[in-house]
Length: 137
Image (cartoon, rainbow, N blue to C red; front, top):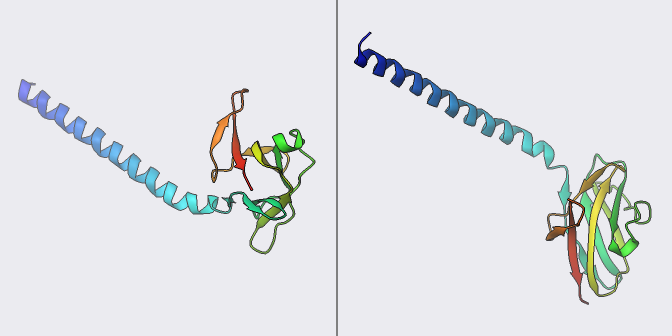
Protein backbone atom coordinates (compact mmCIF):
# COMPACT_ATOMS: atom_id res chain seq x y z
CA UNK A 1 0.00 0.00 0.00
CA UNK A 2 1.55 3.31 -1.05
CA UNK A 3 1.10 6.77 0.47
CA UNK A 4 -1.61 7.89 -1.96
CA UNK A 5 -3.66 4.77 -1.15
CA UNK A 6 -3.32 5.53 2.57
CA UNK A 7 -4.32 9.16 2.00
CA UNK A 8 -7.35 8.08 -0.04
CA UNK A 9 -8.40 5.61 2.65
CA UNK A 10 -8.01 8.22 5.42
CA UNK A 11 -9.92 10.77 3.31
CA UNK A 12 -12.80 8.34 2.78
CA UNK A 13 -12.90 7.48 6.49
CA UNK A 14 -12.99 11.17 7.41
CA UNK A 15 -15.78 11.77 4.91
CA UNK A 16 -17.75 8.91 6.45
CA UNK A 17 -17.22 10.30 9.97
CA UNK A 18 -18.35 13.76 8.81
CA UNK A 19 -21.41 12.31 7.06
CA UNK A 20 -22.31 10.29 10.16
CA UNK A 21 -21.92 13.37 12.40
CA UNK A 22 -24.17 15.41 10.12
CA UNK A 23 -26.74 12.61 10.16
CA UNK A 24 -26.70 12.54 13.97
CA UNK A 25 -27.22 16.30 14.13
CA UNK A 26 -30.09 16.11 11.63
CA UNK A 27 -31.72 13.32 13.62
CA UNK A 28 -31.35 15.31 16.84
CA UNK A 29 -33.00 18.34 15.23
CA UNK A 30 -35.82 16.15 13.89
CA UNK A 31 -36.39 14.53 17.29
CA UNK A 32 -36.41 17.95 18.98
CA UNK A 33 -38.86 19.26 16.38
CA UNK A 34 -41.19 16.33 16.98
CA UNK A 35 -40.77 16.19 20.76
CA UNK A 36 -40.86 19.87 21.78
CA UNK A 37 -44.48 20.49 20.78
CA UNK A 38 -45.47 17.73 23.22
CA UNK A 39 -43.67 19.67 25.96
CA UNK A 40 -45.67 22.80 25.21
CA UNK A 41 -48.53 21.63 27.41
CA UNK A 42 -46.57 23.28 30.22
CA UNK A 43 -46.76 27.03 29.69
CA UNK A 44 -45.75 29.83 32.02
CA UNK A 45 -47.93 32.89 31.80
CA UNK A 46 -46.09 35.10 34.29
CA UNK A 47 -47.38 36.93 37.35
CA UNK A 48 -49.76 39.88 36.88
CA UNK A 49 -50.36 42.67 39.41
CA UNK A 50 -54.07 43.51 39.83
CA UNK A 51 -56.09 45.56 42.33
CA UNK A 52 -56.80 42.40 44.33
CA UNK A 53 -53.22 41.13 44.37
CA UNK A 54 -50.69 39.27 42.27
CA UNK A 55 -52.11 36.61 39.95
CA UNK A 56 -49.84 33.61 39.40
CA UNK A 57 -50.79 31.40 36.45
CA UNK A 58 -49.37 28.25 34.95
CA UNK A 59 -50.58 26.20 32.01
CA UNK A 60 -50.17 22.57 33.04
CA UNK A 61 -53.19 20.55 31.87
CA UNK A 62 -51.71 17.20 32.93
CA UNK A 63 -50.90 18.33 36.47
CA UNK A 64 -52.98 17.02 39.35
CA UNK A 65 -51.86 19.74 41.77
CA UNK A 66 -49.94 23.00 41.40
CA UNK A 67 -48.65 25.14 44.26
CA UNK A 68 -46.65 28.32 44.34
CA UNK A 69 -44.02 28.24 47.07
CA UNK A 70 -42.02 31.31 48.02
CA UNK A 71 -40.72 33.88 50.42
CA UNK A 72 -44.25 35.33 50.69
CA UNK A 73 -45.56 32.11 52.32
CA UNK A 74 -42.44 31.03 54.23
CA UNK A 75 -41.81 28.34 51.58
CA UNK A 76 -44.90 26.38 52.68
CA UNK A 77 -45.67 23.75 50.00
CA UNK A 78 -49.31 23.43 51.08
CA UNK A 79 -50.34 27.04 51.70
CA UNK A 80 -50.89 28.49 48.22
CA UNK A 81 -52.36 25.81 45.95
CA UNK A 82 -53.56 27.08 42.58
CA UNK A 83 -57.11 26.38 41.45
CA UNK A 84 -57.67 24.59 38.20
CA UNK A 85 -57.10 23.53 35.68
CA UNK A 86 -59.66 25.43 33.64
CA UNK A 87 -60.77 24.26 30.17
CA UNK A 88 -57.48 25.60 28.73
CA UNK A 89 -55.37 23.75 31.30
CA UNK A 90 -54.51 26.93 33.23
CA UNK A 91 -54.02 26.92 36.98
CA UNK A 92 -54.41 30.23 38.84
CA UNK A 93 -54.15 31.89 42.25
CA UNK A 94 -54.34 35.51 43.39
CA UNK A 95 -52.23 36.43 46.41
CA UNK A 96 -52.57 39.76 48.24
CA UNK A 97 -48.88 40.71 48.25
CA UNK A 98 -47.49 44.03 49.45
CA UNK A 99 -44.84 45.96 47.57
CA UNK A 100 -41.49 44.22 47.76
CA UNK A 101 -39.15 41.62 46.32
CA UNK A 102 -40.28 38.00 46.39
CA UNK A 103 -38.67 34.72 45.39
CA UNK A 104 -40.83 31.76 44.39
CA UNK A 105 -41.05 28.52 42.45
CA UNK A 106 -43.92 26.31 41.27
CA UNK A 107 -44.35 22.82 42.67
CA UNK A 108 -46.11 20.38 40.34
CA UNK A 109 -47.79 17.30 41.87
CA UNK A 110 -45.75 17.68 45.04
CA UNK A 111 -42.53 16.56 43.36
CA UNK A 112 -41.42 18.67 40.39
CA UNK A 113 -39.97 22.14 41.08
CA UNK A 114 -40.46 24.51 38.17
CA UNK A 115 -39.03 28.00 37.63
CA UNK A 116 -41.19 30.65 36.03
CA UNK A 117 -39.25 31.63 32.87
CA UNK A 118 -41.47 34.71 32.45
CA UNK A 119 -39.44 36.39 35.20
CA UNK A 120 -35.73 36.49 36.13
CA UNK A 121 -34.29 33.87 38.44
CA UNK A 122 -31.69 34.11 41.21
CA UNK A 123 -29.42 31.68 43.02
CA UNK A 124 -31.25 30.22 46.02
CA UNK A 125 -28.08 29.70 48.04
CA UNK A 126 -28.64 25.92 48.06
CA UNK A 127 -27.41 25.06 44.58
CA UNK A 128 -30.71 25.79 42.83
CA UNK A 129 -32.57 28.80 41.50
CA UNK A 130 -35.77 30.68 42.33
CA UNK A 131 -37.93 32.97 40.22
CA UNK A 132 -37.94 36.55 41.49
CA UNK A 133 -40.48 39.36 41.17
CA UNK A 134 -40.51 42.96 42.37
CA UNK A 135 -43.98 44.27 43.25
CA UNK A 136 -44.61 48.02 43.13
CA UNK A 137 -48.27 49.04 42.97
